[in-house]
Amino acid sequence: MRRALSGALLLALLAAPLSAATLKLKDGSRVECKVRSYDPATQTLHVTTADGEQASYTMAQLDGRSVYQVNSSLIPEGDAKAQFLAANFARDAGLYAHAARRYEIALKLDPSMQAAIDTERTKLKRAAAEFCMANAKQAVDKGDISEAERWLKTLVEKLPGEPEAQQASEMLDTHYDKLRADKMAEVEARASEELKRDAASARKDYDQMVEKSRKGLQARGDSQAAGLFRGALKDGQKVLDELDRIERKYTAPDVREKVQEYRGVVSQQMVEVHLSIASQLATQTDYKGAQREVNKALALDPDNERALTMRARIEDYSSRGIGWGWGWR
Amino acid sequence: MKTLLPFLAALSLAVACASPAEDASAPADVPCRCGTPMGDLEGCAHSDCRAGRNNPDNPDCVCGTLEIPAAKE
Image (cartoon, rainbow over all chains, first blue to last red; front, side, top):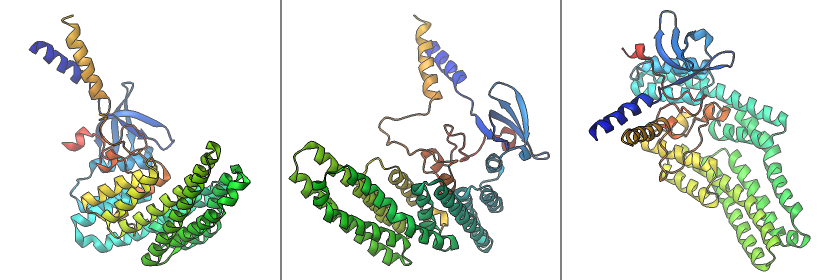
């Protein structure tokens, strides 16, 4: 029996996968490989490719993302200066979150670097804001308003001090209410005249909720934003109560189904407001409060990916005792 | 039969080692967003990335480090 078990273990070890890496080259192609060594003198990575060939790549041949990963693998974890340089590299390669995280690490390792890190962080925020605006404009050009709005909201919420945030706030005026009015119009187009009449007051409250949500995003002060978001949620709850009343009135399954469609649009807006409040609380490092808001969002939509992602990030940041968004604000 | 049993045991162990451990009772992980514009900006909440490890299922993930034998000497 012992022999059989030893054999099994040996076989399992032999079958265990080698730890592979994926390198991205400047021409966009990828190489699945296992790294054999790195030569610092020539800045060359020697690898064995997935099909057993031996190959070498200089850093100049690799895409910025892969160069960053090679750098990450070579720098000593406890070296503040090296972390600082890796952060600068990450920023210039468009890996903004990686850059922000490494500045945080460098600062923890050597608080005397504060001034230098602040200077580089200012550049990081500048680059990130330009990146967000470029993505927003590209999405507008493609007619993908919902994608554009994601970038505009990110700018407004995460980079409020940058000039692009003001521009984003103005752009939200054009897109935010319209996008939600269009969603509601889609639902109304499928509803009967009678149901539309019944839901007229709920519709009014919904429009009010949307307006307060947008103004909350555009608000300058945190307390003003919080007041507007809470007001929006109150309006949203009023709409849901009204929809409950309407649903009780009808027995026909098709009409009840249409009421559910109304409910879906309103719930999504409420989820969004809960997540905006959560983001605001997390920025103030009130992680418990932020988690409460995310849970309320998940109660309305348990599969919401943004809420699930936010929950994971809040757990992570709160357990490590670090600032929200790696010091974006 | 005597030789088949250890072979099957080894095979199941190898399969368990080769595939990422998915505990049925563990909460579902969020998708890895590394390599997407928003992921590059905001960071990724995937469990591997949060733990500072590379996510082998996403070729665009640059979290964690590569294994470079000579560099560790």
